[in-house]
Length: 237
Image (cartoon, rainbow, N blue to C red; front, side, top):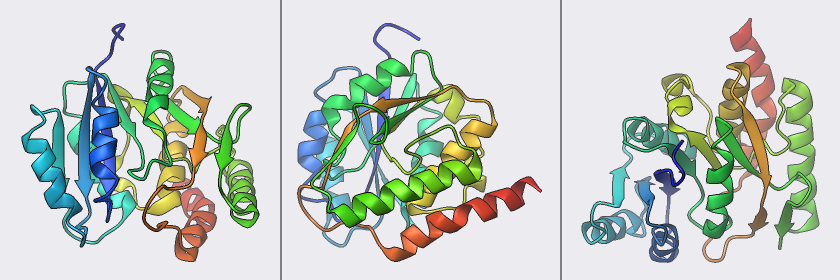
Protein backbone atom coordinates (compact mmCIF):
# COMPACT_ATOMS: atom_id res chain seq x y z
CA UNK A 1 0.00 0.00 0.00
CA UNK A 2 1.41 3.45 -0.82
CA UNK A 3 2.67 5.79 1.89
CA UNK A 4 -0.44 7.97 1.51
CA UNK A 5 -3.24 5.61 0.44
CA UNK A 6 -6.38 6.89 -1.19
CA UNK A 7 -9.34 6.49 1.13
CA UNK A 8 -13.09 6.37 0.52
CA UNK A 9 -15.24 6.91 3.62
CA UNK A 10 -18.73 5.43 3.34
CA UNK A 11 -21.32 7.14 5.57
CA UNK A 12 -24.96 6.04 5.74
CA UNK A 13 -27.36 8.83 6.68
CA UNK A 14 -30.91 9.08 7.96
CA UNK A 15 -32.01 12.49 9.25
CA UNK A 16 -28.47 13.87 9.67
CA UNK A 17 -28.98 17.25 8.01
CA UNK A 18 -27.40 19.19 10.90
CA UNK A 19 -24.35 16.95 11.20
CA UNK A 20 -23.57 16.31 7.53
CA UNK A 21 -21.88 19.60 6.51
CA UNK A 22 -19.58 19.48 9.54
CA UNK A 23 -18.70 15.85 8.92
CA UNK A 24 -17.95 16.42 5.23
CA UNK A 25 -15.61 19.28 6.13
CA UNK A 26 -13.82 17.13 8.73
CA UNK A 27 -13.36 14.09 6.47
CA UNK A 28 -12.38 15.96 3.32
CA UNK A 29 -9.85 18.08 5.22
CA UNK A 30 -7.41 15.27 4.36
CA UNK A 31 -6.37 15.49 0.72
CA UNK A 32 -6.30 11.75 -0.01
CA UNK A 33 -9.79 11.19 1.41
CA UNK A 34 -13.06 11.00 -0.48
CA UNK A 35 -16.54 10.38 0.84
CA UNK A 36 -19.63 8.45 -0.22
CA UNK A 37 -22.92 9.34 1.47
CA UNK A 38 -25.66 6.71 1.25
CA UNK A 39 -28.89 8.43 2.22
CA UNK A 40 -31.78 6.23 3.29
CA UNK A 41 -34.61 8.52 2.18
CA UNK A 42 -34.19 11.01 5.03
CA UNK A 43 -37.42 12.98 5.61
CA UNK A 44 -35.40 15.96 6.86
CA UNK A 45 -33.76 16.57 3.47
CA UNK A 46 -30.33 15.13 4.25
CA UNK A 47 -30.12 13.57 0.80
CA UNK A 48 -30.88 16.83 -1.02
CA UNK A 49 -28.33 18.67 1.11
CA UNK A 50 -25.74 15.99 0.34
CA UNK A 51 -26.38 16.55 -3.38
CA UNK A 52 -25.82 20.30 -2.95
CA UNK A 53 -22.53 19.75 -1.11
CA UNK A 54 -21.40 17.15 -3.65
CA UNK A 55 -21.93 19.57 -6.52
CA UNK A 56 -19.30 21.87 -4.96
CA UNK A 57 -16.84 19.17 -3.87
CA UNK A 58 -14.79 18.69 -7.05
CA UNK A 59 -16.05 15.09 -7.20
CA UNK A 60 -14.65 14.25 -3.76
CA UNK A 61 -18.14 13.64 -2.38
CA UNK A 62 -20.51 11.18 -4.01
CA UNK A 63 -24.12 10.53 -3.02
CA UNK A 64 -26.21 7.39 -3.34
CA UNK A 65 -29.94 7.58 -2.66
CA UNK A 66 -30.87 4.20 -1.27
CA UNK A 67 -34.20 2.90 -2.57
CA UNK A 68 -36.25 0.00 -1.29
CA UNK A 69 -36.56 -1.31 2.28
CA UNK A 70 -34.79 0.92 4.77
CA UNK A 71 -31.98 -0.20 7.01
CA UNK A 72 -28.37 0.43 7.92
CA UNK A 73 -27.20 -2.92 6.57
CA UNK A 74 -28.90 -2.43 3.21
CA UNK A 75 -27.42 1.06 2.90
CA UNK A 76 -23.92 -0.21 3.68
CA UNK A 77 -24.17 -3.09 1.20
CA UNK A 78 -25.19 -0.68 -1.55
CA UNK A 79 -22.41 1.72 -0.60
CA UNK A 80 -19.79 -1.04 -0.42
CA UNK A 81 -20.81 -2.38 -3.82
CA UNK A 82 -20.03 1.06 -5.22
CA UNK A 83 -16.83 1.40 -3.16
CA UNK A 84 -15.18 -1.82 -4.34
CA UNK A 85 -15.07 -0.59 -7.94
CA UNK A 86 -13.57 2.78 -7.01
CA UNK A 87 -9.83 3.48 -7.54
CA UNK A 88 -8.97 3.56 -3.82
CA UNK A 89 -6.80 1.47 -1.52
CA UNK A 90 -8.88 1.72 1.66
CA UNK A 91 -12.64 1.84 2.30
CA UNK A 92 -13.72 3.14 5.70
CA UNK A 93 -17.13 3.23 7.34
CA UNK A 94 -18.39 5.51 10.07
CA UNK A 95 -21.54 7.04 11.54
CA UNK A 96 -22.65 10.53 10.56
CA UNK A 97 -23.40 11.73 14.09
CA UNK A 98 -19.81 12.36 15.33
CA UNK A 99 -19.93 9.43 17.73
CA UNK A 100 -16.96 8.36 15.60
CA UNK A 101 -14.25 11.00 15.61
CA UNK A 102 -13.01 11.85 12.07
CA UNK A 103 -9.62 12.74 13.56
CA UNK A 104 -9.16 9.06 14.45
CA UNK A 105 -9.62 7.87 10.87
CA UNK A 106 -5.86 8.07 10.08
CA UNK A 107 -5.16 5.64 12.95
CA UNK A 108 -7.40 3.04 11.36
CA UNK A 109 -6.12 3.73 7.85
CA UNK A 110 -2.52 3.34 9.01
CA UNK A 111 -3.32 -0.04 10.59
CA UNK A 112 -4.81 -1.17 7.28
CA UNK A 113 -1.29 -1.29 5.84
CA UNK A 114 -0.85 -4.66 7.55
CA UNK A 115 -4.46 -5.81 8.00
CA UNK A 116 -7.49 -6.50 5.84
CA UNK A 117 -10.01 -5.20 8.37
CA UNK A 118 -9.36 -2.66 11.13
CA UNK A 119 -12.01 -2.16 13.81
CA UNK A 120 -12.19 1.01 15.88
CA UNK A 121 -12.72 -0.61 19.27
CA UNK A 122 -14.18 0.68 22.52
CA UNK A 123 -13.30 -2.51 24.37
CA UNK A 124 -9.55 -2.92 24.00
CA UNK A 125 -6.96 -1.16 26.22
CA UNK A 126 -7.08 2.55 25.46
CA UNK A 127 -10.63 2.46 24.10
CA UNK A 128 -13.43 4.22 25.92
CA UNK A 129 -17.07 5.29 25.78
CA UNK A 130 -18.07 8.85 26.70
CA UNK A 131 -21.50 10.00 27.94
CA UNK A 132 -23.30 6.66 27.87
CA UNK A 133 -25.57 5.73 30.79
CA UNK A 134 -24.42 2.71 32.76
CA UNK A 135 -27.20 0.42 31.54
CA UNK A 136 -26.37 1.04 27.89
CA UNK A 137 -22.64 0.46 28.45
CA UNK A 138 -23.39 -2.73 30.39
CA UNK A 139 -25.68 -4.00 27.61
CA UNK A 140 -23.11 -3.28 24.90
CA UNK A 141 -20.27 -4.87 26.85
CA UNK A 142 -22.28 -7.99 27.65
CA UNK A 143 -23.54 -8.32 24.08
CA UNK A 144 -20.02 -8.13 22.68
CA UNK A 145 -18.79 -10.70 25.18
CA UNK A 146 -21.65 -13.03 24.22
CA UNK A 147 -21.06 -12.61 20.47
CA UNK A 148 -17.33 -13.20 20.86
CA UNK A 149 -17.89 -16.39 22.83
CA UNK A 150 -20.78 -17.74 20.75
CA UNK A 151 -19.07 -17.23 17.39
CA UNK A 152 -15.46 -17.61 18.56
CA UNK A 153 -14.90 -14.28 16.91
CA UNK A 154 -11.45 -12.71 17.52
CA UNK A 155 -12.91 -9.21 17.88
CA UNK A 156 -13.66 -7.52 21.20
CA UNK A 157 -15.98 -4.86 19.69
CA UNK A 158 -17.85 -6.69 16.95
CA UNK A 159 -20.73 -4.18 17.03
CA UNK A 160 -18.49 -1.21 16.25
CA UNK A 161 -19.38 0.59 13.02
CA UNK A 162 -16.08 2.49 12.83
CA UNK A 163 -13.93 0.39 10.50
CA UNK A 164 -11.50 0.43 7.61
CA UNK A 165 -11.14 -2.29 4.98
CA UNK A 166 -8.50 -2.87 2.37
CA UNK A 167 -10.54 -2.47 -0.79
CA UNK A 168 -9.39 -5.78 -2.29
CA UNK A 169 -10.42 -7.58 0.91
CA UNK A 170 -13.84 -5.94 0.94
CA UNK A 171 -14.28 -7.01 -2.69
CA UNK A 172 -13.91 -10.65 -1.53
CA UNK A 173 -16.77 -10.36 0.95
CA UNK A 174 -20.15 -11.96 0.04
CA UNK A 175 -21.92 -8.61 0.07
CA UNK A 176 -25.11 -9.71 -1.75
CA UNK A 177 -25.59 -12.46 0.86
CA UNK A 178 -25.36 -10.20 3.93
CA UNK A 179 -28.82 -10.15 5.51
CA UNK A 180 -28.48 -8.31 8.80
CA UNK A 181 -29.20 -4.75 9.83
CA UNK A 182 -28.04 -2.50 12.66
CA UNK A 183 -25.47 -3.97 15.05
CA UNK A 184 -26.07 -7.41 13.58
CA UNK A 185 -24.76 -6.17 10.23
CA UNK A 186 -21.44 -5.24 11.83
CA UNK A 187 -21.22 -8.64 13.53
CA UNK A 188 -22.05 -10.55 10.36
CA UNK A 189 -19.42 -8.66 8.37
CA UNK A 190 -16.76 -9.31 11.02
CA UNK A 191 -17.71 -12.99 11.15
CA UNK A 192 -17.52 -13.37 7.37
CA UNK A 193 -14.12 -11.64 7.37
CA UNK A 194 -12.83 -13.89 10.16
CA UNK A 195 -13.91 -17.13 8.56
CA UNK A 196 -12.19 -16.08 5.33
CA UNK A 197 -8.93 -15.76 7.20
CA UNK A 198 -8.70 -11.98 6.92
CA UNK A 199 -6.08 -10.25 9.03
CA UNK A 200 -8.12 -8.32 11.62
CA UNK A 201 -6.84 -5.65 14.01
CA UNK A 202 -8.53 -3.50 16.64
CA UNK A 203 -7.46 0.08 17.26
CA UNK A 204 -8.63 1.81 20.46
CA UNK A 205 -11.05 4.69 19.91
CA UNK A 206 -13.06 7.11 21.99
CA UNK A 207 -16.75 6.68 21.25
CA UNK A 208 -18.84 9.74 22.11
CA UNK A 209 -22.63 9.86 22.34
CA UNK A 210 -24.09 11.62 19.30
CA UNK A 211 -23.98 15.44 19.29
CA UNK A 212 -27.39 16.15 17.75
CA UNK A 213 -30.55 14.26 16.87
CA UNK A 214 -31.85 10.99 18.25
CA UNK A 215 -30.11 7.65 18.58
CA UNK A 216 -31.16 4.92 16.11
CA UNK A 217 -30.83 2.32 18.91
CA UNK A 218 -33.90 0.13 19.45
CA UNK A 219 -34.67 -3.16 21.19
CA UNK A 220 -35.40 -4.71 17.78
CA UNK A 221 -31.82 -3.96 16.74
CA UNK A 222 -30.44 -5.42 19.97
CA UNK A 223 -32.54 -8.58 19.69
CA UNK A 224 -31.48 -9.10 16.07
CA UNK A 225 -27.83 -8.94 17.12
CA UNK A 226 -28.35 -11.39 20.01
CA UNK A 227 -30.12 -13.86 17.74
CA UNK A 228 -27.49 -13.68 15.01
CA UNK A 229 -25.11 -16.45 16.21
CA UNK A 230 -27.79 -19.12 15.75
CA UNK A 231 -28.52 -17.94 12.21
CA UNK A 232 -24.84 -17.81 11.27
CA UNK A 233 -24.21 -21.29 12.64
CA UNK A 234 -27.05 -22.57 10.45
CA UNK A 235 -25.32 -21.00 7.45
CA UNK A 236 -22.25 -23.14 8.13
CA UNK A 237 -24.25 -26.35 8.51
